Amino acid sequence: MDLEEAREFRERCSQCAAVSWGLTDEGKYYCTSCHNVTERSREVIDTGAIPNTKIQAINRGLKRKRKLEKGWDWYVCEGFQHILYQQAEALQSLGVGPELKNEVLHNFWKRYLQKSKQAYCKNPVYTSRRKSTVLEDNSSHSDWESEPELLSDVSRLSFGESGSESQPDVRTPKPFPIIKASHSETTSVCSGSLDGVEYSLRKEKGVMKMSVPRTLAFCYLSLLWQRETITLSDLLRFVEEEHIPYIHAFQHFPEEMKLYGRDKGIFAIECWPNYEVIFKKIIEVATFLDLPRFPDITENCYLHPNILCMKYLMEVNLPDEMHNLTCLVVKATGIGEVDFLRFDPIAKKAKTVKYDVQAVAVIVVALKLLFLLDDNLEWSLSNIAEKYNKKNKEDKPWFDFRKWYQVMKKAIDEKKQKWEEARAKFLWKGEKPLYYSAIDRPVVYKRREMVVSLQKQFSTLVDSAPNIEKKKPSSFQFNWTEEDSERPCFHSHSLQGVLQQKGQSLRTKNSLYWLSTQKFCKSHCKHVTTYEESNFSLSYQFILNLFSFLLRIKTSFLHEEVSLIEKRLFKAKYNKTNKKSSRSRKARKY
Image (cartoon, rainbow, N blue to C red; front, side, top):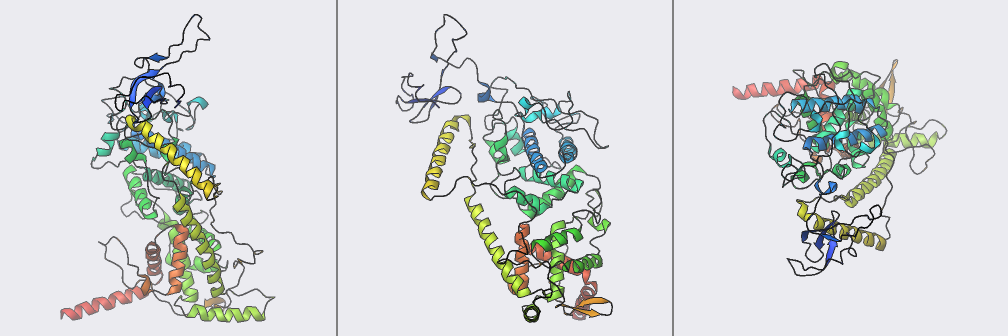
Protein backbone atom coordinates (compact mmCIF):
# COMPACT_ATOMS: atom_id res chain seq x y z
CA MET A 1 0.00 0.00 0.00
CA ASP A 2 1.61 3.20 -1.24
CA LEU A 3 0.68 6.33 0.77
CA GLU A 4 2.56 8.71 -1.57
CA GLU A 5 0.54 7.65 -4.61
CA ALA A 6 -2.70 8.20 -2.64
CA ARG A 7 -1.94 11.81 -1.71
CA GLU A 8 -3.62 13.11 -4.86
CA PHE A 9 -6.97 11.81 -3.62
CA ARG A 10 -8.31 14.61 -1.39
CA GLU A 11 -11.91 13.66 -0.68
CA ARG A 12 -13.03 13.26 2.92
CA CYS A 13 -13.78 9.83 4.37
CA SER A 14 -17.51 9.09 4.68
CA GLN A 15 -16.95 7.41 8.05
CA CYS A 16 -14.55 9.69 9.98
CA ALA A 17 -14.25 12.75 7.63
CA ALA A 18 -10.45 12.44 7.61
CA VAL A 19 -8.33 13.05 4.50
CA SER A 20 -5.69 10.37 4.86
CA TRP A 21 -5.74 7.71 2.16
CA GLY A 22 -3.73 4.66 1.25
CA LEU A 23 -3.87 2.15 -1.59
CA THR A 24 -4.73 -1.53 -1.11
CA ASP A 25 -3.12 -4.30 -3.13
CA GLU A 26 -6.23 -4.26 -5.36
CA GLY A 27 -5.79 -0.54 -6.16
CA LYS A 28 -8.65 0.72 -4.00
CA TYR A 29 -8.39 3.71 -1.65
CA TYR A 30 -8.73 3.03 2.08
CA CYS A 31 -8.76 5.44 5.03
CA THR A 32 -5.66 5.07 7.20
CA SER A 33 -7.61 6.40 10.21
CA CYS A 34 -10.63 4.12 10.30
CA HIS A 35 -9.60 1.56 7.60
CA ASN A 36 -12.74 2.19 5.59
CA VAL A 37 -12.34 0.83 2.03
CA THR A 38 -14.02 2.82 -0.75
CA GLU A 39 -15.08 1.83 -4.23
CA ARG A 40 -12.85 4.57 -5.67
CA SER A 41 -9.72 3.23 -7.29
CA ARG A 42 -6.61 4.56 -8.95
CA GLU A 43 -5.87 3.40 -12.47
CA VAL A 44 -2.56 4.19 -14.14
CA ILE A 45 -2.09 3.49 -17.85
CA ASP A 46 1.35 3.06 -19.35
CA THR A 47 1.49 5.76 -22.06
CA GLY A 48 4.82 4.67 -23.45
CA ALA A 49 3.24 2.53 -26.14
CA ILE A 50 0.25 4.80 -26.88
CA PRO A 51 1.01 8.29 -28.29
CA ASN A 52 -1.01 11.45 -27.52
CA THR A 53 -2.55 10.10 -24.32
CA LYS A 54 -2.85 11.46 -20.82
CA ILE A 55 -2.57 9.71 -17.46
CA GLN A 56 -5.93 9.16 -15.87
CA ALA A 57 -5.29 9.35 -12.13
CA ILE A 58 -8.70 8.66 -10.66
CA ASN A 59 -11.46 6.59 -12.07
CA ARG A 60 -14.91 6.29 -10.53
CA GLY A 61 -15.65 2.64 -10.09
CA LEU A 62 -13.44 -0.28 -10.94
CA LYS A 63 -13.80 -1.08 -14.66
CA ARG A 64 -12.10 -4.47 -14.46
CA LYS A 65 -11.70 -6.60 -11.39
CA ARG A 66 -8.14 -7.71 -10.88
CA LYS A 67 -7.45 -11.42 -10.99
CA LEU A 68 -5.97 -11.54 -7.50
CA GLU A 69 -8.87 -9.62 -5.96
CA LYS A 70 -11.58 -12.06 -6.98
CA GLY A 71 -9.39 -15.13 -7.16
CA TRP A 72 -10.37 -18.48 -8.56
CA ASP A 73 -13.46 -20.56 -8.02
CA TRP A 74 -12.31 -23.49 -5.88
CA TYR A 75 -13.81 -26.18 -3.72
CA VAL A 76 -12.68 -27.51 -0.33
CA CYS A 77 -11.57 -30.83 -1.80
CA GLU A 78 -9.21 -28.95 -4.11
CA GLY A 79 -7.62 -27.32 -1.06
CA PHE A 80 -7.01 -30.73 0.54
CA GLN A 81 -5.65 -31.98 -2.77
CA HIS A 82 -3.10 -29.20 -2.69
CA ILE A 83 -2.10 -30.06 0.92
CA LEU A 84 -1.65 -33.73 -0.01
CA TYR A 85 0.50 -32.70 -2.95
CA GLN A 86 2.74 -30.58 -0.72
CA GLN A 87 3.04 -33.39 1.86
CA ALA A 88 3.88 -35.92 -0.83
CA GLU A 89 6.56 -33.58 -2.18
CA ALA A 90 8.00 -33.24 1.33
CA LEU A 91 8.06 -37.02 1.83
CA GLN A 92 9.80 -37.44 -1.49
CA SER A 93 12.47 -34.93 -0.40
CA LEU A 94 12.99 -37.11 2.72
CA GLY A 95 13.93 -40.05 0.53
CA VAL A 96 10.58 -41.73 -0.17
CA GLY A 97 10.20 -43.10 -3.68
CA PRO A 98 8.18 -41.16 -6.29
CA GLU A 99 5.73 -44.07 -6.56
CA LEU A 100 4.13 -42.97 -3.30
CA LYS A 101 3.06 -39.64 -4.79
CA ASN A 102 2.35 -40.65 -8.36
CA GLU A 103 0.65 -43.97 -7.74
CA VAL A 104 -0.33 -44.96 -4.19
CA LEU A 105 -1.43 -41.64 -2.70
CA HIS A 106 -3.09 -40.69 -5.99
CA ASN A 107 -5.18 -43.85 -6.00
CA PHE A 108 -6.18 -43.44 -2.34
CA TRP A 109 -7.25 -39.83 -2.93
CA LYS A 110 -9.13 -40.73 -6.11
CA ARG A 111 -10.88 -43.51 -4.21
CA TYR A 112 -11.93 -41.04 -1.49
CA LEU A 113 -13.36 -38.60 -4.05
CA GLN A 114 -15.32 -41.44 -5.54
CA LYS A 115 -16.58 -42.79 -2.20
CA SER A 116 -17.60 -39.32 -1.01
CA LYS A 117 -19.30 -38.65 -4.39
CA GLN A 118 -17.21 -35.58 -5.14
CA ALA A 119 -15.68 -36.96 -8.35
CA TYR A 120 -15.30 -40.09 -10.50
CA CYS A 121 -19.02 -40.95 -10.13
CA LYS A 122 -22.25 -40.49 -12.11
CA ASN A 123 -24.01 -38.05 -9.76
CA PRO A 124 -21.41 -35.89 -7.99
CA VAL A 125 -22.40 -33.55 -5.18
CA TYR A 126 -21.25 -30.52 -7.23
CA THR A 127 -24.07 -30.13 -9.72
CA SER A 128 -25.66 -26.72 -9.05
CA ARG A 129 -22.49 -24.70 -9.62
CA ARG A 130 -19.15 -25.11 -11.35
CA LYS A 131 -17.89 -28.66 -11.06
CA SER A 132 -14.77 -29.31 -9.06
CA THR A 133 -11.74 -29.56 -11.32
CA VAL A 134 -11.06 -33.07 -10.12
CA LEU A 135 -14.09 -34.05 -12.21
CA GLU A 136 -12.48 -33.01 -15.47
CA ASP A 137 -10.97 -35.88 -17.45
CA ASN A 138 -9.53 -34.26 -20.55
CA SER A 139 -5.79 -34.50 -20.03
CA SER A 140 -3.22 -37.08 -18.97
CA HIS A 141 0.15 -36.76 -17.27
CA SER A 142 2.59 -39.19 -15.68
CA ASP A 143 2.76 -37.53 -12.26
CA TRP A 144 1.46 -34.64 -10.14
CA GLU A 145 3.79 -32.16 -11.78
CA SER A 146 2.93 -30.00 -14.76
CA GLU A 147 4.40 -27.09 -16.71
CA PRO A 148 6.45 -24.67 -14.56
CA GLU A 149 4.11 -21.71 -15.04
CA LEU A 150 1.14 -23.81 -13.98
CA LEU A 151 2.56 -25.08 -10.68
CA SER A 152 1.01 -22.20 -8.76
CA ASP A 153 -2.45 -23.51 -9.51
CA VAL A 154 -3.86 -26.09 -7.13
CA SER A 155 -5.85 -27.88 -9.79
CA ARG A 156 -2.89 -28.31 -12.09
CA LEU A 157 -1.68 -31.13 -9.85
CA SER A 158 -1.95 -33.91 -12.39
CA PHE A 159 -1.79 -37.49 -11.17
CA GLY A 160 -0.08 -40.67 -12.27
CA GLU A 161 -2.17 -43.41 -13.80
CA SER A 162 -1.95 -46.60 -11.83
CA GLY A 163 -5.48 -47.16 -10.61
CA SER A 164 -6.53 -50.35 -8.94
CA GLU A 165 -8.99 -52.78 -10.46
CA SER A 166 -11.80 -51.58 -8.24
CA GLN A 167 -11.56 -48.02 -9.59
CA PRO A 168 -13.09 -46.82 -12.85
CA ASP A 169 -10.92 -46.25 -15.87
CA VAL A 170 -10.53 -42.50 -15.86
CA ARG A 171 -7.84 -40.10 -16.91
CA THR A 172 -6.13 -37.39 -14.90
CA PRO A 173 -7.81 -34.09 -13.96
CA LYS A 174 -7.74 -31.20 -16.39
CA PRO A 175 -5.71 -28.11 -15.41
CA PHE A 176 -7.86 -25.68 -13.49
CA PRO A 177 -8.55 -22.56 -15.63
CA ILE A 178 -8.87 -19.03 -14.31
CA ILE A 179 -12.58 -18.24 -14.38
CA LYS A 180 -13.82 -14.67 -14.72
CA ALA A 181 -17.20 -15.00 -13.12
CA SER A 182 -19.72 -12.51 -11.85
CA HIS A 183 -19.97 -11.70 -8.16
CA SER A 184 -22.93 -14.02 -7.63
CA GLU A 185 -21.13 -16.97 -9.16
CA THR A 186 -17.84 -16.68 -7.30
CA THR A 187 -16.86 -17.20 -3.69
CA SER A 188 -19.34 -17.43 -0.88
CA VAL A 189 -20.03 -14.43 1.34
CA CYS A 190 -18.77 -16.34 4.42
CA SER A 191 -15.93 -18.31 2.83
CA GLY A 192 -13.32 -18.03 0.12
CA SER A 193 -14.19 -21.44 -1.30
CA LEU A 194 -17.45 -22.07 -3.13
CA ASP A 195 -18.63 -24.72 -0.65
CA GLY A 196 -16.91 -23.63 2.60
CA VAL A 197 -20.14 -22.91 4.48
CA GLU A 198 -21.92 -25.94 3.07
CA TYR A 199 -18.94 -28.20 3.84
CA SER A 200 -18.65 -27.08 7.47
CA LEU A 201 -22.37 -27.74 8.03
CA ARG A 202 -22.52 -31.03 6.14
CA LYS A 203 -23.30 -34.05 8.36
CA GLU A 204 -24.14 -36.85 5.96
CA LYS A 205 -24.30 -40.27 7.55
CA GLY A 206 -21.77 -42.75 6.23
CA VAL A 207 -19.59 -40.11 4.56
CA MET A 208 -16.23 -39.23 6.06
CA LYS A 209 -15.48 -35.50 5.90
CA MET A 210 -11.93 -34.64 4.97
CA SER A 211 -9.80 -32.72 7.47
CA VAL A 212 -6.17 -31.65 7.80
CA PRO A 213 -5.35 -34.42 10.35
CA ARG A 214 -6.75 -36.97 7.90
CA THR A 215 -4.19 -35.86 5.31
CA LEU A 216 -1.57 -37.41 7.62
CA ALA A 217 -3.67 -40.58 7.70
CA PHE A 218 -3.55 -40.68 3.88
CA CYS A 219 0.22 -40.16 3.96
CA TYR A 220 0.82 -42.92 6.52
CA LEU A 221 -1.40 -45.39 4.67
CA SER A 222 0.63 -44.68 1.53
CA LEU A 223 3.88 -45.18 3.45
CA LEU A 224 2.55 -48.44 4.92
CA TRP A 225 1.48 -49.69 1.50
CA GLN A 226 4.96 -49.00 0.15
CA ARG A 227 6.55 -50.39 3.36
CA GLU A 228 8.75 -47.33 3.64
CA THR A 229 11.24 -46.76 6.47
CA ILE A 230 9.08 -44.15 8.23
CA THR A 231 6.94 -45.09 11.22
CA LEU A 232 3.91 -43.14 12.39
CA SER A 233 5.91 -41.57 15.25
CA ASP A 234 8.59 -40.49 12.75
CA LEU A 235 5.94 -38.97 10.48
CA LEU A 236 4.44 -36.92 13.33
CA ARG A 237 7.89 -35.82 14.50
CA PHE A 238 8.77 -34.64 10.99
CA VAL A 239 5.52 -32.66 11.03
CA GLU A 240 6.48 -31.15 14.37
CA GLU A 241 9.92 -30.20 13.01
CA GLU A 242 8.18 -28.57 10.02
CA HIS A 243 9.72 -30.89 7.44
CA ILE A 244 6.18 -31.84 6.34
CA PRO A 245 3.48 -29.13 5.85
CA TYR A 246 0.68 -29.37 8.38
CA ILE A 247 0.09 -26.47 10.80
CA HIS A 248 0.42 -23.75 8.16
CA ALA A 249 -0.32 -25.94 5.15
CA PHE A 250 -2.77 -23.38 3.75
CA GLN A 251 0.12 -20.89 3.47
CA HIS A 252 1.28 -22.82 0.40
CA PHE A 253 -2.01 -22.22 -1.42
CA PRO A 254 -1.66 -20.09 -4.58
CA GLU A 255 -2.36 -16.38 -4.14
CA GLU A 256 -5.44 -16.73 -6.36
CA MET A 257 -7.06 -19.16 -3.89
CA LYS A 258 -8.76 -16.79 -1.46
CA LEU A 259 -9.19 -18.36 1.96
CA TYR A 260 -11.25 -16.70 4.68
CA GLY A 261 -14.39 -17.09 6.81
CA ARG A 262 -15.50 -20.71 7.25
CA ASP A 263 -12.35 -21.86 5.43
CA LYS A 264 -10.39 -20.92 8.55
CA GLY A 265 -12.14 -23.61 10.61
CA ILE A 266 -11.50 -26.19 7.88
CA PHE A 267 -7.83 -25.58 7.03
CA ALA A 268 -6.37 -23.78 10.07
CA ILE A 269 -4.83 -26.07 12.72
CA GLU A 270 -4.00 -24.85 16.22
CA CYS A 271 -2.67 -28.01 17.87
CA TRP A 272 0.06 -30.56 17.22
CA PRO A 273 -0.92 -33.96 15.79
CA ASN A 274 -1.52 -36.59 18.46
CA TYR A 275 -0.42 -40.19 17.92
CA GLU A 276 -3.61 -41.78 19.24
CA VAL A 277 -5.89 -39.39 17.34
CA ILE A 278 -4.05 -39.84 14.03
CA PHE A 279 -3.96 -43.62 14.51
CA LYS A 280 -7.75 -43.71 14.92
CA LYS A 281 -8.14 -41.58 11.80
CA ILE A 282 -5.92 -44.01 9.89
CA ILE A 283 -8.37 -46.80 10.73
CA GLU A 284 -11.33 -44.58 9.78
CA VAL A 285 -9.83 -43.67 6.41
CA ALA A 286 -8.82 -47.24 5.57
CA THR A 287 -12.28 -48.54 6.53
CA PHE A 288 -14.14 -45.83 4.62
CA LEU A 289 -12.08 -46.44 1.49
CA ASP A 290 -12.56 -50.24 1.72
CA LEU A 291 -8.87 -50.67 1.02
CA PRO A 292 -7.72 -54.18 0.13
CA ARG A 293 -5.19 -56.19 2.13
CA PHE A 294 -1.87 -54.38 2.45
CA PRO A 295 1.44 -55.99 1.39
CA ASP A 296 2.88 -58.39 3.95
CA ILE A 297 5.40 -57.22 6.56
CA THR A 298 8.17 -59.83 6.34
CA GLU A 299 11.39 -60.19 8.38
CA ASN A 300 13.27 -58.05 5.86
CA CYS A 301 10.85 -55.12 6.16
CA TYR A 302 11.73 -52.10 8.25
CA LEU A 303 8.43 -52.33 10.18
CA HIS A 304 9.13 -55.87 11.41
CA PRO A 305 9.58 -55.86 15.23
CA ASN A 306 13.06 -57.42 15.03
CA ILE A 307 14.39 -54.57 12.89
CA LEU A 308 12.56 -51.86 14.82
CA CYS A 309 13.83 -53.28 18.11
CA MET A 310 17.41 -52.97 16.86
CA LYS A 311 16.72 -49.40 15.80
CA TYR A 312 15.32 -48.36 19.19
CA LEU A 313 18.04 -50.25 21.11
CA MET A 314 20.56 -48.09 19.27
CA GLU A 315 18.43 -44.99 19.90
CA VAL A 316 18.39 -45.37 23.70
CA ASN A 317 22.03 -46.52 23.94
CA LEU A 318 21.37 -50.08 25.13
CA PRO A 319 23.77 -53.03 24.46
CA ASP A 320 23.58 -54.72 21.07
CA GLU A 321 23.41 -58.11 22.82
CA MET A 322 19.90 -57.29 23.99
CA HIS A 323 18.70 -57.78 20.42
CA ASN A 324 18.97 -61.57 20.87
CA LEU A 325 16.60 -61.38 23.82
CA THR A 326 14.10 -59.13 22.03
CA CYS A 327 14.06 -61.57 19.09
CA LEU A 328 13.23 -64.39 21.54
CA VAL A 329 10.37 -62.33 22.98
CA VAL A 330 9.05 -61.61 19.48
CA LYS A 331 9.20 -65.30 18.59
CA ALA A 332 7.58 -66.46 21.86
CA THR A 333 4.69 -64.00 21.56
CA GLY A 334 4.15 -64.58 17.83
CA ILE A 335 4.02 -60.86 17.04
CA GLY A 336 6.60 -61.30 14.29
CA GLU A 337 4.39 -63.58 12.21
CA VAL A 338 3.17 -62.31 8.85
CA ASP A 339 -0.47 -62.95 9.75
CA PHE A 340 -0.17 -60.89 12.92
CA LEU A 341 1.55 -57.93 11.25
CA ARG A 342 -0.71 -57.85 8.19
CA PHE A 343 -3.05 -54.88 7.86
CA ASP A 344 -6.35 -55.83 6.23
CA PRO A 345 -9.00 -53.09 6.69
CA ILE A 346 -11.87 -55.05 5.12
CA ALA A 347 -11.29 -58.27 7.12
CA LYS A 348 -13.91 -59.29 9.67
CA LYS A 349 -11.35 -59.31 12.48
CA ALA A 350 -9.07 -56.59 11.24
CA LYS A 351 -5.94 -56.21 13.38
CA THR A 352 -4.30 -52.83 13.67
CA VAL A 353 -0.67 -52.93 14.70
CA LYS A 354 1.21 -49.96 16.15
CA TYR A 355 4.55 -51.13 14.81
CA ASP A 356 6.77 -48.61 16.59
CA VAL A 357 4.95 -48.75 19.94
CA GLN A 358 4.93 -52.55 19.81
CA ALA A 359 8.70 -52.71 19.22
CA VAL A 360 9.37 -50.37 22.13
CA ALA A 361 7.08 -52.46 24.37
CA VAL A 362 9.16 -55.55 23.53
CA ILE A 363 12.31 -53.73 24.72
CA VAL A 364 10.58 -52.79 28.00
CA VAL A 365 9.63 -56.44 28.58
CA ALA A 366 13.23 -57.49 27.83
CA LEU A 367 14.55 -54.98 30.39
CA LYS A 368 12.15 -56.38 32.98
CA LEU A 369 13.34 -59.90 32.23
CA LEU A 370 16.98 -58.84 32.74
CA PHE A 371 16.76 -56.33 35.60
CA LEU A 372 13.23 -56.84 37.01
CA LEU A 373 12.92 -53.03 37.43
CA ASP A 374 11.68 -53.19 41.03
CA ASP A 375 14.04 -50.45 42.37
CA ASN A 376 16.17 -53.14 43.99
CA LEU A 377 17.60 -55.85 41.73
CA GLU A 378 18.78 -53.45 38.98
CA TRP A 379 20.93 -51.53 41.49
CA SER A 380 22.39 -54.74 42.98
CA LEU A 381 23.39 -55.91 39.50
CA SER A 382 24.85 -52.45 38.83
CA ASN A 383 27.11 -52.78 41.89
CA ILE A 384 28.40 -56.12 40.58
CA ALA A 385 29.05 -54.68 37.12
CA GLU A 386 30.83 -51.62 38.59
CA LYS A 387 33.20 -53.79 40.65
CA TYR A 388 33.98 -56.02 37.66
CA ASN A 389 34.72 -53.05 35.38
CA LYS A 390 37.15 -51.57 37.93
CA LYS A 391 39.10 -54.84 38.24
CA ASN A 392 39.04 -55.70 34.52
CA LYS A 393 39.56 -52.41 32.69
CA GLU A 394 41.10 -54.07 29.62
CA ASP A 395 38.26 -56.58 29.15
CA LYS A 396 34.92 -55.94 27.56
CA PRO A 397 32.94 -53.86 30.08
CA TRP A 398 29.79 -55.22 31.66
CA PHE A 399 26.62 -53.21 31.23
CA ASP A 400 26.05 -50.97 34.26
CA PHE A 401 22.38 -50.06 34.59
CA ARG A 402 23.06 -47.22 37.07
CA LYS A 403 25.63 -45.54 34.82
CA TRP A 404 23.33 -45.94 31.80
CA TYR A 405 20.47 -44.41 33.79
CA GLN A 406 22.58 -41.36 34.69
CA VAL A 407 23.70 -40.81 31.10
CA MET A 408 20.23 -41.23 29.61
CA LYS A 409 18.51 -39.07 32.25
CA LYS A 410 20.85 -36.17 31.51
CA ALA A 411 20.44 -36.61 27.75
CA ILE A 412 16.66 -36.90 27.86
CA ASP A 413 16.31 -33.89 30.20
CA GLU A 414 18.33 -31.73 27.81
CA LYS A 415 16.30 -32.97 24.86
CA LYS A 416 13.01 -32.29 26.64
CA GLN A 417 14.08 -28.78 27.56
CA LYS A 418 14.95 -27.93 23.96
CA TRP A 419 11.69 -29.49 22.78
CA GLU A 420 9.62 -27.46 25.27
CA GLU A 421 11.46 -24.25 24.33
CA ALA A 422 10.85 -24.90 20.62
CA ARG A 423 7.15 -25.44 21.27
CA ALA A 424 6.93 -22.28 23.36
CA LYS A 425 8.58 -20.21 20.61
CA PHE A 426 6.48 -21.67 17.81
CA LEU A 427 4.47 -19.05 15.90
CA TRP A 428 0.92 -20.30 15.48
CA LYS A 429 0.01 -17.29 13.34
CA GLY A 430 1.22 -17.76 9.78
CA GLU A 431 2.76 -15.20 7.47
CA LYS A 432 -0.53 -14.98 5.57
CA PRO A 433 -3.14 -14.01 8.17
CA LEU A 434 -6.64 -15.38 7.89
CA TYR A 435 -9.66 -13.07 7.89
CA TYR A 436 -13.41 -13.61 7.98
CA SER A 437 -14.35 -11.37 5.03
CA ALA A 438 -12.70 -9.31 2.29
CA ILE A 439 -13.67 -6.14 4.16
CA ASP A 440 -11.51 -7.15 7.14
CA ARG A 441 -8.47 -7.86 4.95
CA PRO A 442 -6.71 -4.46 5.19
CA VAL A 443 -7.14 -4.31 8.97
CA VAL A 444 -5.89 -7.88 9.49
CA TYR A 445 -2.84 -7.33 7.28
CA LYS A 446 -2.07 -4.06 9.06
CA ARG A 447 -2.16 -5.80 12.42
CA ARG A 448 0.07 -8.54 11.07
CA GLU A 449 2.64 -5.97 9.93
CA MET A 450 2.63 -4.45 13.42
CA VAL A 451 3.15 -7.87 15.05
CA VAL A 452 6.07 -8.71 12.74
CA SER A 453 7.64 -5.32 13.45
CA LEU A 454 7.33 -5.82 17.22
CA GLN A 455 8.78 -9.33 16.96
CA LYS A 456 11.82 -8.02 15.10
CA GLN A 457 12.34 -5.26 17.69
CA PHE A 458 12.00 -7.70 20.57
CA SER A 459 14.42 -10.20 19.00
CA THR A 460 16.94 -7.38 18.58
CA LEU A 461 16.59 -6.38 22.25
CA VAL A 462 17.05 -9.90 23.60
CA ASP A 463 19.85 -10.55 21.09
CA SER A 464 18.23 -13.71 19.71
CA ALA A 465 18.44 -14.93 16.14
CA PRO A 466 14.94 -14.64 14.55
CA ASN A 467 15.70 -17.14 11.81
CA ILE A 468 16.75 -20.52 13.18
CA GLU A 469 17.98 -23.04 10.65
CA LYS A 470 16.01 -26.25 10.49
CA LYS A 471 17.77 -29.42 11.53
CA LYS A 472 18.19 -32.04 8.87
CA PRO A 473 15.56 -34.78 9.29
CA SER A 474 16.80 -38.03 10.78
CA SER A 475 15.24 -41.25 12.04
CA PHE A 476 17.45 -41.00 15.14
CA GLN A 477 17.08 -38.32 17.79
CA PHE A 478 20.28 -39.27 19.65
CA ASN A 479 23.76 -39.91 18.33
CA TRP A 480 26.06 -42.13 20.41
CA THR A 481 29.76 -42.56 19.63
CA GLU A 482 32.61 -44.36 21.40
CA GLU A 483 34.81 -41.24 21.21
CA ASP A 484 32.46 -39.10 23.32
CA SER A 485 33.73 -39.29 26.91
CA GLU A 486 30.94 -37.15 28.39
CA ARG A 487 28.23 -39.31 26.85
CA PRO A 488 29.60 -42.88 26.81
CA CYS A 489 28.22 -45.38 24.34
CA PHE A 490 26.94 -48.69 25.77
CA HIS A 491 26.33 -50.50 22.47
CA SER A 492 29.40 -52.74 22.80
CA HIS A 493 28.93 -53.51 26.51
CA SER A 494 28.38 -57.10 27.60
CA LEU A 495 25.40 -58.63 29.41
CA GLN A 496 27.47 -61.31 31.16
CA GLY A 497 26.74 -59.69 34.50
CA VAL A 498 23.01 -60.43 34.16
CA LEU A 499 23.22 -63.73 32.24
CA GLN A 500 24.43 -67.18 33.31
CA GLN A 501 25.40 -70.25 31.35
CA LYS A 502 23.12 -73.29 31.67
CA GLY A 503 24.17 -76.08 29.40
CA GLN A 504 24.46 -74.72 25.89
CA SER A 505 22.16 -71.76 26.47
CA LEU A 506 22.31 -68.49 28.36
CA ARG A 507 19.65 -67.65 30.92
CA THR A 508 18.93 -64.56 32.96
CA LYS A 509 20.17 -64.56 36.56
CA ASN A 510 16.87 -62.98 37.47
CA SER A 511 14.17 -65.67 37.75
CA LEU A 512 11.42 -63.31 38.92
CA TYR A 513 8.95 -61.24 36.92
CA TRP A 514 6.05 -58.99 37.88
CA LEU A 515 3.15 -58.34 35.54
CA SER A 516 2.39 -54.75 34.58
CA THR A 517 -1.34 -55.53 34.61
CA GLN A 518 -2.95 -58.16 36.80
CA LYS A 519 -6.43 -57.79 35.37
CA PHE A 520 -7.47 -56.29 32.04
CA CYS A 521 -10.52 -54.12 31.49
CA LYS A 522 -13.66 -55.55 29.94
CA SER A 523 -14.31 -55.39 26.21
CA HIS A 524 -16.75 -52.47 26.48
CA CYS A 525 -14.04 -50.24 27.98
CA LYS A 526 -12.21 -47.88 25.66
CA HIS A 527 -8.84 -48.72 27.24
CA VAL A 528 -7.13 -52.04 27.93
CA THR A 529 -5.84 -51.14 31.39
CA THR A 530 -5.17 -48.14 33.62
CA TYR A 531 -1.82 -46.64 34.57
CA GLU A 532 -1.12 -44.95 37.92
CA GLU A 533 2.52 -43.94 38.36
CA SER A 534 2.40 -44.34 42.15
CA ASN A 535 1.68 -48.08 41.73
CA PHE A 536 4.93 -48.77 39.87
CA SER A 537 8.64 -48.60 40.59
CA LEU A 538 10.69 -45.52 39.73
CA SER A 539 12.84 -47.50 37.30
CA TYR A 540 9.78 -48.68 35.38
CA GLN A 541 8.43 -45.13 35.30
CA PHE A 542 11.73 -43.83 33.92
CA ILE A 543 11.82 -46.45 31.15
CA LEU A 544 8.24 -45.68 30.11
CA ASN A 545 8.82 -41.91 30.19
CA LEU A 546 11.99 -42.32 28.12
CA PHE A 547 10.33 -44.27 25.30
CA SER A 548 7.11 -42.26 25.49
CA PHE A 549 9.06 -39.07 24.82
CA LEU A 550 10.90 -40.64 21.89
CA LEU A 551 7.61 -41.65 20.26
CA ARG A 552 5.70 -38.55 21.47
CA ILE A 553 2.96 -40.69 23.01
CA LYS A 554 1.28 -40.88 26.40
CA THR A 555 2.90 -43.08 29.04
CA SER A 556 -0.37 -44.94 29.60
CA PHE A 557 -0.50 -45.75 25.88
CA LEU A 558 2.88 -47.52 26.07
CA HIS A 559 1.94 -49.24 29.34
CA GLU A 560 -1.08 -50.79 27.62
CA GLU A 561 1.10 -52.18 24.84
CA VAL A 562 3.57 -53.62 27.38
CA SER A 563 0.67 -55.33 29.17
CA LEU A 564 -0.56 -56.86 25.89
CA ILE A 565 2.92 -58.23 25.13
CA GLU A 566 3.10 -59.75 28.61
CA LYS A 567 -0.34 -61.27 28.17
CA ARG A 568 0.88 -63.14 25.10
CA LEU A 569 4.21 -64.06 26.74
CA PHE A 570 2.81 -65.31 30.07
CA LYS A 571 -0.42 -67.00 29.05
CA ALA A 572 -0.16 -69.55 31.88
CA LYS A 573 0.00 -66.89 34.58
CA TYR A 574 -3.02 -65.06 33.23
CA ASN A 575 -4.96 -68.31 32.89
CA LYS A 576 -4.31 -69.12 36.55
CA THR A 577 -5.47 -65.71 37.71
CA ASN A 578 -8.61 -65.98 35.58
CA LYS A 579 -9.42 -69.45 37.05
CA LYS A 580 -8.93 -68.20 40.60
CA SER A 581 -11.20 -65.23 40.02
CA SER A 582 -13.90 -67.45 38.48
CA ARG A 583 -13.71 -69.89 41.46
CA SER A 584 -14.04 -67.05 43.95
CA ARG A 585 -17.13 -65.78 42.14
CA LYS A 586 -18.75 -69.23 42.27
CA ALA A 587 -17.96 -69.52 46.00
CA ARG A 588 -19.62 -66.15 46.64
CA LYS A 589 -22.77 -67.32 44.87
CA TYR A 590 -23.05 -70.38 47.10
